[in-house]
Image 1 (cartoon, rainbow, N blue to C red):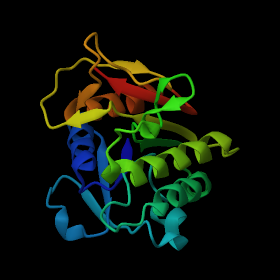
Image 2 (cartoon, rainbow, N blue to C red):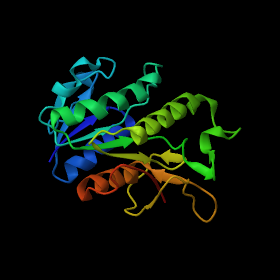
Image 3 (cartoon, rainbow, N blue to C red):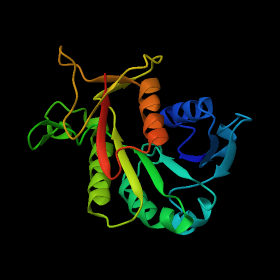
Length: 211
């Protein structure tokens, strides 16, 4: 399967690349700066989410798209919702039927109707991106696009770490362990994303992933 990973040079994106390669997928790294990608096993394409005129052309031979963007590098978080909206139109035009979106945890509910990002102690430095991801989720849910999308929210804490090979999947509620901790390693988050790709599960849904 030919898998395009937008944001492949980022922290989460790079883990998606390695997990996809380990499963035998053909990986196309779509990045703003191709010089950041040095893996000879990966096809590299220059791709800037701020230049949305040629989106459909960029994905012309792709089977599945995985997208990891937040707008943190440029400081323009509005690009998150804009990209979601554009991909819902462009990917079906290009023949891409599946999109796995790296979503934030901020829109997950800690109690009915109360999102994580709305809590007073939510870190202020992450709030713009969390709100932007919430806007993207709303765009996915209100769309009538034929695209098979899945919005994958990590746990409240996503951290560097090796694979444990086990995780839980939830819905709109924040998953936490028996001690109240909501955590997942970036490696196991990538495993969960690729498991969803390989099984074609959770169409048109937001899911949460945590230990």
